[in-house]
Image 1 (tube, rainbow, N blue to C red):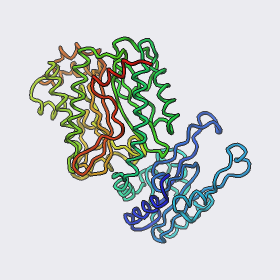
Image 2 (image 1 turned 60 degrees about the horizontal axis):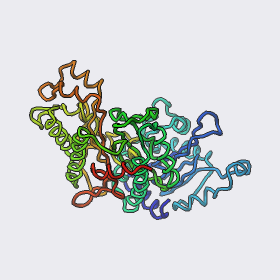
Image 3 (image 1 turned 30 degrees about the vertical axis):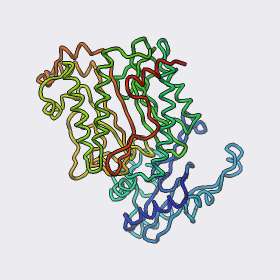
Image 4 (image 1 turned 90 degrees about the vertical axis):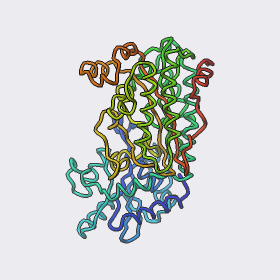
Length: 464
């Protein structure tokens, strides 16, 4: 939790953007795994954390813009709860830590909402992603639970998104704290993974490391020999000599700021010549994109430049052909690079995506494409200093997608399917860094994690 002045300033800035009404914030509740008292690890709502910093279940808050008043709602632990959970600071004591002076029992929130509705006052809230909070909105505001998110305040969504977009120095420092834990995770994975191991052994090892150094994982890791499956959370494969392993994982700092790093490495410590060819193309794409990033640059154009580097590299191998810019404009490269270049990073590993990507990643001038691959670019707008995002190009050989496109004779002027099929069992390569946009370019955040072939082979050959 930051100093109370940080939260006071954030709420003050939000009140300037929302001219009237009440802003309603719902914290998260405990989420049972299989019965009430056996819960998943608690994770507070990120918007609630941003404005109030209180990492406790069953809280809510309002900002009354008209009356310039802020209230945190929650109940103190009673003796029965203390017996099981231990003593906790009172709600008033915790609220003081974020600069809020007024607290009330949580059952008084409904009375305040009822009065506001009777007075015809606007109650602003953001889209809800948990069903219990959707039902709470239904109970508080009388909105059909199936339509709650239709009534989310677009004014509030835009205001919060613009405010959270640019990270402060203290936020960037916390993101780097998370990345520095990720550094240890990625080094450990390269050194620990060996032929004959199961993926789950490596995944479990790095999760334990993350837990020992911070709050744990920012998201379920993608650790797999099947690199071609973009979000693969299955860990049951046995690693074999000659395999490439993708480790897409990130730690979360004690402040709840996140990281998201990907490295692809040979399980036996040495790349084959063919693996080197593909890896160097992805590395060139990653480094070119990083060099392209600067304020005012549209991130969509950075994505397309990264795609051109991939296309040029695949042309050199005889896998693609024709004019590079024409191939990328048509979307032919997406057979091998079917996702976006990156996403925002902050309190969420896909920062603010609960607001809807089009509400912060696109604007009136930057419209979302419907083209396969490009439509998956989560953030496309012009960049500004202070934005933190990922840069994660990749090359993948997905047999099912290859067969589909080949049967459809798709982009035969740009794709040499005879050569593609020689690589159909290659799997893939992805490389991901976290960067912050600076006043004249960008900076890769955190302790440098081995990325060149020489660096990775040096670490991955030194097994533990």
